[in-house]
Image (cartoon, rainbow, N blue to C red; front, side, top):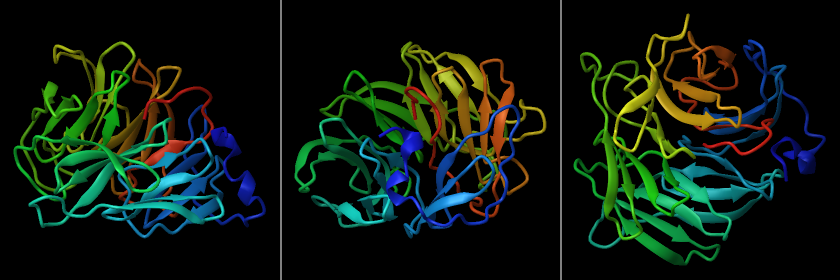
Length: 313
């Protein structure tokens, strides 16, 4: 099912009033999560689907069957249909000798039907089937263990490795299936460290492997986007105050579009600056989105529903 076909099964749902999206030369249909619900916002600002997921989402997926994969609690992810029926559920619990809290911040459904889940606290990645059987388990190396900050977004690369952002360590690490680190990039401060959500630090959020072998990084409270090559050199970036009239705060999820544009999620921007910003490689803003009625200060996970072709996200 193509993204723009989402909700056909739920046709007839009443449209809800929503704040207008800010658009430059284009407009997008957006699915995003905040205020403990997932909503679909049209280019005209109307909202035609919502689901109360009851949790903060740091990851979100629209599956090929038209269902949504999303968190339902800090340690629970579910698959929900457009009709809002939960058809699959996974709950992460303490494993081995660990008996503390476990959270899920990154997950992904593969074409073979397995679901990859990164578990903080347990400091591991598992791949599970629909019956809850674990088919693969990969330990993670964490310098500063914390049940809420061991990881953020995690993605599997085309080579079968895992690209893991370790928020508390300020590091992006690439693991093989055995848990060996085969590549690492450490974030650096570009100014004085300040502790608030609107401040500056090295708490990294997301990383994506590009077809050219480089890695695109959503810097978290590093307040910037970085593209680094395998040697760790920065080859492209968007800095905190480089976009006219826009300031970047907690840079969370990124989406790399087929045309090369990058959609930046600007979390904790306080309603003054856009939550989503699409820039081209010349760093020109071609679209921005601010909806302070439907969403708020914690919009992290989102999907553009109207983009043709493969999106890296």
